[in-house]
Length: 109
Length: 321
Image (tube, rainbow over all chains, first blue to last red; front, side, top):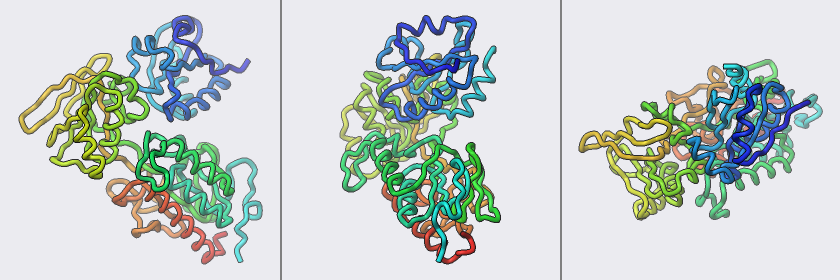
């Protein structure tokens, strides 16, 4: 089944990132951020193409506490988790091709 | 007569293929070139890249575009985009990787195939320059930012430093003043380069202060920005800080066109003062050129001129079509 980019709340963050047997990418995004709007379709396409990864999007305005705890001060920030651990943090817009290369490179790190 | 109609020369099987005019870049320069070019009835494609609307779309409020006071950057950019599309231009999300001279005129390779055209308009704009100081890269996204429009809300009630003294630095400092408890501008000269109306707004703003004749040497912090080290006329000074916004100029995005057209030392496309480049059939518009004033209106004006020059060129070089 092709994956989708799923919108989650701050409360769901701990649950989805604790999954041990999957790679997870969470995009911390905001409605007022232009680059976030550009990133969204790239992630939608990646979610459909990269079977080994789960993709989530979280609105920092609705998850201020979680974003604050994670030290996020820029949107978009993407955090990659593997085995329930943060393994990489990507800040700023990236196109689909370079994201795919980066994610393939860090999977299983 | 020239057969400048899409479908006669073009084989639009998917987006890649042949057009009369290929425009690299989807900011105000590229979109205006597209609007004019489409209205000249030239088959026109815009390679939008990954920043639709260009830098304009990332600017919060624009007060110097005539006729649209207080425009929101992304709204203005999106209006320009839909106007170009309505006029008949195609806009594709491809990003130019390399343009070379070919038998057909120019072949522009992108991540979505190759586009061929007798005329190429370079309107790829510019991206923010980095300072290259310790801590800048490590703390990017953890307090270091190049986009106040994007990140200002994270600094509500916090202290931020803005580096630079030009229009962008001052505009963004004023935007940050709506959120931060203090905005400190550090500038290496003793006067702001920004237009006087912006500069005086900044100097009058109670939240904002300027440290003159000084440079940022280092950004310090663990998980986030905690302080900055400045070189001031009175010696080194460390200031506690939560965020650093860098506006020290821009670097032209001309790597794909190296070898095709002459570039200046700063990487901008050298033009003859209007839109003509060192190579016939290639025109340049907007911030990618080395001209003094880099505004939305000058970019748009360049775009219109580039399209007119393209039309003129095609009329005088029918063999190119």
